[in-house]
Length: 216
Ligand SMILES: N[C@@H](CCC(=O)N[C@@H](CS)C(=O)NCC(=O)O)C(=O)O
Image 1 (spheres, helix red, strand yellow):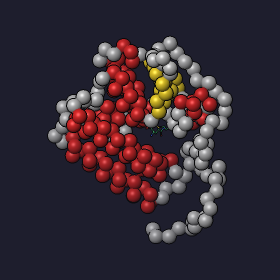
Image 2 (tube, protein in one colour):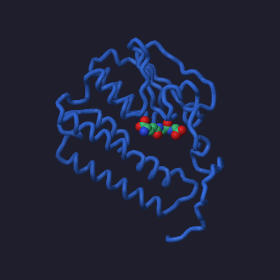
Image 3 (cartoon, protein in one colour):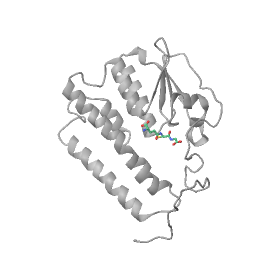
Image 4 (cartoon, protein in one colour):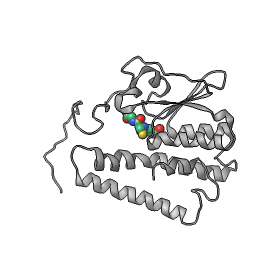
């Protein structure tokens, strides 16, 4: 297909009823839409999240830490229902100005520390507990390279392929072909890396595995 009926406007305007599965929560502006405090439980770590691939990364990390004997990783998990717009409540926006799950608050120190972006949360927890991140500089660099690879690649998978294949109101062959090819390529990157490695950076299980596993 080489042509379409659509001509992009010179100045784009927001049509709020543009269809698609997430039309009710997609907006071209940031910030809170309602006043809503976040609940706080009894544990040092407060997790505000949902069982999506990005959300699951943090839950897996916290459970791995607990299984490894790090009792300081006890946490309260609070559901943020993104389809209902919980991510636009003022309390959530205070801990993540980007209004996306997962977000976390560590209340174990003198002042609460917010952390957002799933990769940043994995790194924060790995450094806090000295776990699942190699200490040796070369291996640490390799681990962070794969962590950042995953963070940069996921939007092609979820926002690109997943969106146009499953959620877009019309099926556009060009978009599905473009993102299917990219997702296949990413899977081949992983196949080749894992052909001779038990875990993504070798014999050691790290936060790179946790980030990659939930998506691929
Ligand atoms: N780069 C972010 C992406 C987070 C993200 O896209 N979260 C989605 C669910 S997986 C979300 O909260 N969407 C709600 C929205 O877009 O309003 C991360 O890795 O934490």
